[in-house]
Image (cartoon, rainbow, N blue to C red; front, side, top):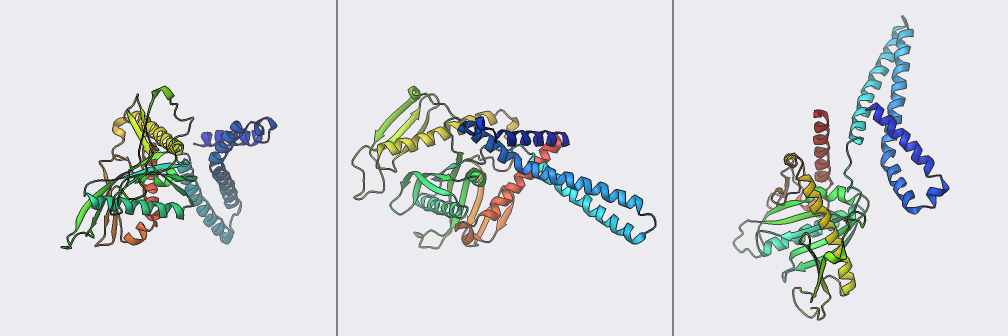
Length: 358
């Protein structure tokens, strides 16, 4: 590990020198790539510097113990300091192991979230709307921006299907564990008998694909226009501004009818399509890896029931890590960090365990 850290430190120093070069500064693409790598390596190098300072302090404390002779008071102080430094060394090493874990290259990207009503009819559509509100409030708390890509709502205020973009540094890292089936247990407003109903909604989470991530041949696209639909009323679009784009080689489809402008709808639909193609390719690659590590946190399989929201008990239960909190109202108001941080911690522990097994 120390050899690897030394190589990282050398690369960090090299990048620091390159960033001061006039040729690099004038090359925006190269400068941007180096700045991104510099930002990634910086916390590792800082922690490695802390480790080396700790190593020096341990050596000095050990030398002091050898030279103290019969001065018991000073000897005791030096031994206590040495124990503290050694415990500090273990903490630093553990933090370095975590920093050296393979990074998810998508973590820093924007994210496209898709919510669909599942089992439960209108109640599932209403629950889908609750989830969208929850994610919107969470995004606001984290300083992210929300942009609705497409929306298919119901007359009672529910959501049949919605696709929205979350923009901000690290958005994917905070949303990626939300993919799966979300279950709600509550008494619907339309239920006169007071019986608790169970409904579901599915959430898909896709890192926003950049142009460099996916190459799409325009000849492989089938583009259809149609009139925007909705819950009805005077705002129904009379022109064919809605766009549906089909990627013929894969059969993947994306559509957008949220904007009045056909051009804007096409732009949004292409962003969704590009991300769906990238996600399909990623899943194809993952499927060749040993059973996709079935026990891995957050596999994103839509058939997986990942979380239950129980209204009568005020309870949120995440089934992947066995975590239950009795803070349903706060959670639905966007206070999601307690669960998301626990999922990230569990995922990190799993990766560390797998690394030790290699």
